[in-house]
Image (cartoon, rainbow, N blue to C red; front, side, top):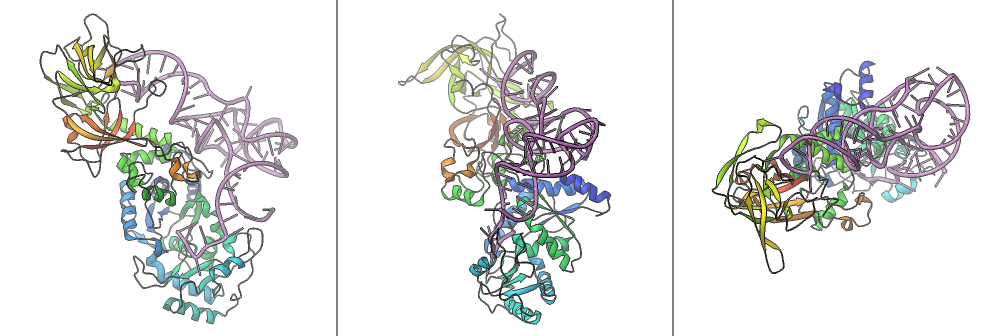
Amino acid sequence: MSTELRSNFLRTQIQSDLEAGRTGEVVTRFPPEPNGFLHIGHAKSITVNFGLAEQFGGRCHLRFDDTNPEKESQEFINSIQEDVSWLGYEWSGEVRFASSYFEQFYQWALHLIDNGCAYVCDLSAEEARRYRGSLVEAGQNSPFRERSASENRALFEQMRSGVFAEGAKVLRAKIDMAAPNMNLRDPILYRIRHVAHHQTGTDWTIYPTYDFAHGQEDAIEGVTHSICTLEFEDHRPLYEWFIEHLPVPHTPRQIEFARLNTSYTITSKRQLKQLVDANVVTGWDDPRMPTIAGLRRRGYPATAIRHFCEEVGTSRSDSIVDVAMLESAVRDHLNKTAARAMCVLRPLRLTLTNLPNESVLLVPNHPADEAFGVREVTFGQDLFIDCQDFRESANKHFKRLVLGKRVRLRGAIVIEGERCETDAEGNVTHVFARCVTLEPGADPDDGIKPKGVIHWVSADHSVPAVVRCYDRLFSQEAPGRCDDILEAVNPESLVVMQDAVIEPMLAKAVPEQVYQFEREGYFVADRYEHQSEAPVFNMTIGLRDNWSASNG
RNA sequence: UGGGGCGUCGCCAAGUGGCAAGGCAGCGGGUUUUGAUCCCGCCAUUCGGAGGUUCGAAUCCUCCCGCCCCAGCCA
């Protein structure tokens, strides 16, 4: 398996670390802040971290980076664990929390204070911003920068005891206010927040910042390779500064890679929330959402998502991957794993005028894999076909049912269109055809073979179903760049087929089971709403179609 | 204009001095009771640009151009 994996800079780097003896094992971690739902971008990070551990025989931790209680909740902790598990990964040991290391972080902060490497600063947020300087101007030292270690220690202890108001004081590292890297201009280590924490309750009124927590979390857990996205690159010198100045038990290393972006997709929490709030979608797990929960409800298999993440590779260059690659991975997986069945989305009644009697046909569940077996499908005089599969007359490119022309009914016989009835508006309401053959699978005796095949469902042995057909949520390739995300929404991202009919077997589908509705696409029984008595399917992805796009 | 990164086919991406993998998309053709699948073929004399080093450069050097990130008591 691992020999098939394409090389990338992370695998190359880890391999060389192992060979050079810089590390004897590989320990990674997926460290989400529990402040929202996971999306396709997180899936990439998950496959990178868990994948690397797996490939090098190491382990990967699931650690919640819960240093900012205001934005976090247990609800997100639960959904994140569910999503990681659903993607097929098992984290090493128990779920971990940065918050469980708070006391250690506090002791380390004291260590910095005692060594003159940190100080309590009384500047307001606004003042601190001004003192920080700009991208091209050096910052200025805080007037509180030279407080003695003992004064700082006393003040910091008071910060912990809760005597100060939020924002009144912070603990900062004493590094260099003139550093060209802004992150080194005396970064903030602790801020005062009089809010309860979902894990530690009211134990703390000061909370460490990401910078003061992340590297130390890695050190405590023995993480060897701390893999994060490119925007943290500038934080690496600070990450290393803490590791060097603190008596940590281990030296982890941070390596950054480019986050995943896909076309026709947004992953900004703010914009996603706009869609939910404006009811453009039904919720965070709407099948059109790029969240893991949404993709799951859409019927995207976890395996396909993982393959996609591997397929796109891992590099350091900013990119926007064509979402067609994701769709291709989904089709590729489903083609091999989904049983076939028939569903008529837009029913049109078809009567066979010379069919002698009803019969039960044995139809293969997969065209190329006999292991799927066969199923019984009732075939009778009255059927439903899709209204798009019939035309009173058409040119030779239309390979479906036409009056006076032949077509094969999938898994059954060859028929020829005879006549049709229309309503007042001229819409075809009923088609009549005669059977040219009676033996399933047989070709006509006169040698005139039909050009096409259409699917059908017995009118007397079908079950009504609601089928939601989805298309891309956005009609623009880079919707995230729009001023108003709502204007980029594809108005046809959802078309509900209220009158669809399915073969009876499909009504018994287990929620989340995906089938290929022949000639249409892959559809999943809705995870929450599907019931045998009231079937509900979601379109996962349509079949590739080289015809309808360029024709009517 | 300070610092840190990145630029290889329409979109991703291997390649780390020896003569441009692969996938997606696209385009031809074949098989086919899904206009699907599958199969075959085509698709970068060239690696952001210009110089230089070398027998030889996408890979090394120089300069230039373009794009991304950083001034939260967010992560």
